[in-house]
Image (cartoon, rainbow, N blue to C red; front, top):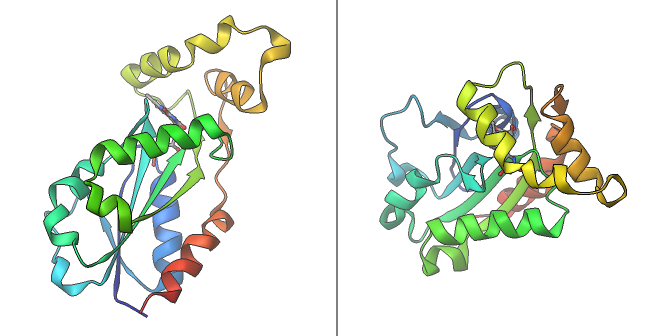
Length: 182
Ligand SMILES: Cc1cc2nc3c(=O)[nH]c(=O)nc-3n(C[C@H](O)[C@H](O)[C@H](O)COP(=O)(O)O)c2cc1C
């Protein structure tokens, strides 16, 4: 299997948990982008990057963007972690839009993307994050009760008490894909 680096950026720990799990199963090197100064891309054939979703943007994706030249010819796998269910088409399209915005057409052609669900604990949120979260989901409070989807309910609940959809088993397709790379 190709030599793999798993890089991540995590504000409250969900992306970190997924990155640690993926790295341990793949026996890959693990890097927290908030702590590491840079990466010796030469050493790796496969780069797995993970970032949390924040108001429709991927935390830390700038690192991938600014190192695009070093990624050419390598296997690039991106995973996102959000509270929204990635099986819901609108959530999946937000993720795709955010990746599209950040990456060149060439990288888009070759990269693989996976999305997982995370945690939100309102008691742990920084003040600004709580405000942003309120704005992100404010449109939901205008919906009638019967119009709310399970995903909408989870979003609304996350402002009141902790919701946790973390499921490391969901990383299996990503792990299987990376395992096939030479
Ligand atoms: C300010 C804020 C904005 C968020 N925006 C989104 C979003 O647009 N889509 C989503 O699915 N989840 C969103 N979330 C939920 C986070 O993605 C989720 O809590 C995730 O587990 C964070 O991962 P991290 O702790 O590794 O950074 C948001 C959370 C906060 C606090």
